[in-house]
Image 1 (cartoon, rainbow, N blue to C red):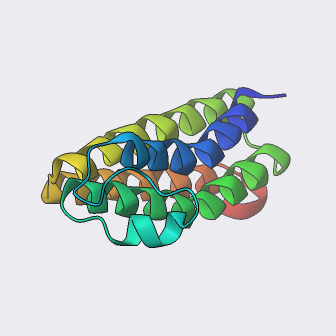
Image 2: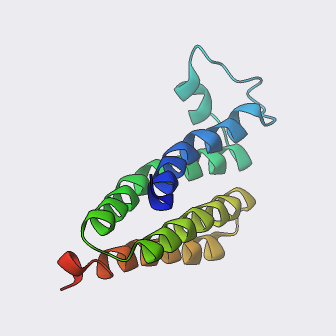
Length: 131
């Protein structure tokens, strides 16, 4: 399995790992309620709410990234470039999540744009798409 496909796997896990930050963090709502997880997460505010928002954004961005990797992988793009861009996307998502949690809104938006740029680059390097 290619590095790029491993990155898709990691990107798929990242929202769930981000959710763990909210679940184990301190909250005015008390300890995490596993009987009603969505309701508990929806009640968070401040840092906890930002963690949940970062998690949701991870779920939203994942399909586009996964599709871009699959298209590039099977569309004839150079494997080394696909791997490099996929790893870059993972790095961008880590930085994005940190920016979201720290409430660095402007930087977060710039980092989000970088992630979209990585996805577009994956599509543009694919001969069957970029031609």
